[in-house]
Amino acid sequence: MKLTVQHVDGLRFLVTVGEHAVVVDAAPEDGGGGTSTSAPQLFAAALGACILEFVANSCRLRGVPFEHLSLELEYEEVKRPRRIGEVRATIHIEPEPDEATKRRLLGVARHVTLMNTLARPPEVAIQFITGAADEERISG
Image 1 (cartoon, rainbow, N blue to C red):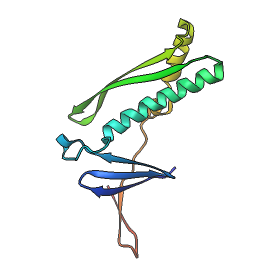
Image 2: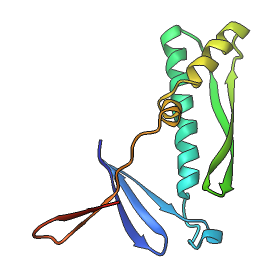
Image 3: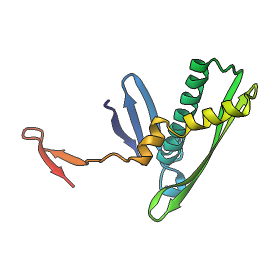
Image 4: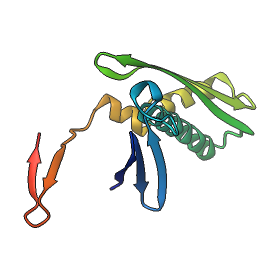
């Protein structure tokens, strides 16, 4: 999987994944324009969407009917070191399933792709490529 991030202006960036694109902009208190979702907000949104995707798919696979399915996610931004802190997700489903089904769905929600990634963080290699001709790599 590959995506690109391009600087637009200020602290605003265009993220392109295949044929899909989203703009990310830092909040005004962080020096951005606040014209779009910030990176921490996008991270939280991705986590919430990942949880709900797995829950909806589990319902589909197990024949659990629902007319309404949504998630509210609250998170804190911690300053030192700067990161996302505590996250609380609340799933709303109608009609409400029985307690055993809710427990199974909570189990599914705890093991979604992004939760597994947070539990086992990937190595992140960051490098600069300089010089168009020789593509010298500078890693840190």
